[in-house]
Image (cartoon, one colour):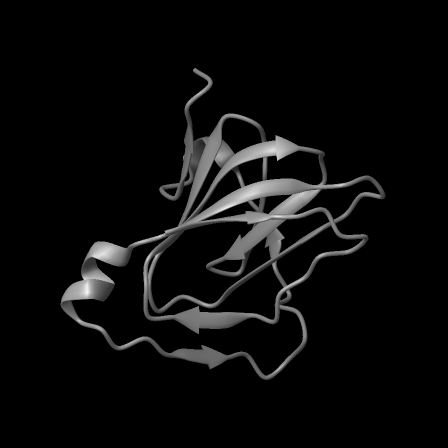
Length: 113
């Protein structure tokens, strides 16, 4: 399953722990977008795929004024085998994520190389 996130002035998501595996893929337009996983803020860049492992708090948003459009994907084959989906929401509106060294990250893959 994929979802195209339309441009919004300041898109944000309340941090939550998903039961399904997710990925941020195909930054289509814009800059300043991020996904926060493992208490690390990961910049969305064209050509990168960011994995969001199950049972890890994550959120996303942007730090720019222009539109930001990206494509989300879910691990639905596993969901179809175990058709139970639930999440646990974080107790704060935003995770206090720090910067991340993209080159050393096990959850960011650059398809542009």
